[in-house]
Image (cartoon, rainbow, N blue to C red):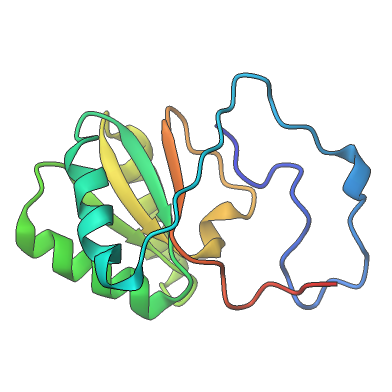
Length: 140
């Protein structure tokens, strides 16, 4: 799976507008959504992780603090799958190590901000979960 290969740039320094008519959803991609009441957000996400232990999942969160919170919380629960985090405030070397470590694993959960959607190739990912909308996306 390649995330962000043809995606518009989310870089606020970008001056050009992306072409919106050049994108297509692959026919084999199934998109689904659920609306979860805020008090159930943590338990629903944990239930998702527990029912997908043998897969690779990327869980996008809206901020670095949420990434760190969910990693710490769910690591304490020991769900039975490696948990990892990737966000923009990590040193480049650490981000690179996390990226390659995640790519090597047969199953893992990567909690990430939108930094992971910017042109990184994540092989064998079966689930991409967008928990919240990113806070820093420009809407035109």
